[in-house]
Length: 363
Image (cartoon, rainbow, N blue to C red; front, side, top):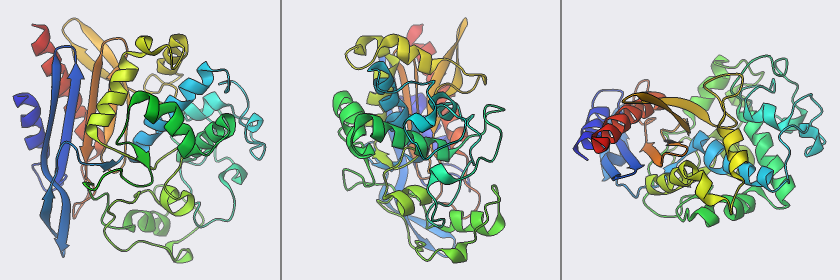
């Protein structure tokens, strides 16, 4: 516990540090969670003041962690049930999508889609956007691919995405604090200061040169984003329910989810273990599996693979299949005056501490 607390205190230090953080680890012989700093801050110019302390039970906007907790996990179940075929063309489920791409291509971020596009401005559906790249040429991380995957889940399940994820993921895994669009409790971390990040993306054309500017949209949030999804497409275009972003959860729920995936062979009532194994396997890119990012965790005499995903607002979660190791991060990293520390940096620190603690238990 002291090592985890020390990591939390270190990550809260510095001008670019998040105001608050929650770290959690679960492994054989080890259960530890710590929280520090503030979940809500108020601003005077560019000076922030903590208002409400961060706690282990604080709810967080998961942002892209939604891609694995909701979308990828739901697809493991649907593929196991024979309702989705990884190698079928996307147009089998979404006839409006005519490009040459499969469900597997979407999960591997190799479908040739735009990385991002402001769907709250364009009148076109995501299925109608032209490809930006040649399919399967290389991995190019895409929110649009997971928006499509969310629609595939809804089509295959026969209900809207929120209902599908409730039935396929959150209810059977006991994720009582995990839901789309709004937190299930009142103690929520502020996600962002406002919509300035996406306004800047549009006006600078960076990092994606989309043919739109912020003046073309009048629904910008110019206030602190509390209890609402920070991601613009998820909030403005989809009401907080999308395959790429939209879930709220807590670090304890993320650990519950990650432990279930780590112990995947014990849940053959939910999915076929061989299907889960296929999702865990690296694609053409060693760092990318089907939906999951792949990380390294060093232990004495071996290096383990952690499957997981980071989220832009400041959360991440991961697990080691077959070893019962789970880890989760919650933070509000965007609430800084300058450039925020990357979620990947925070998660890497948690990975390092996890390795240290697991080694300590094994001695």
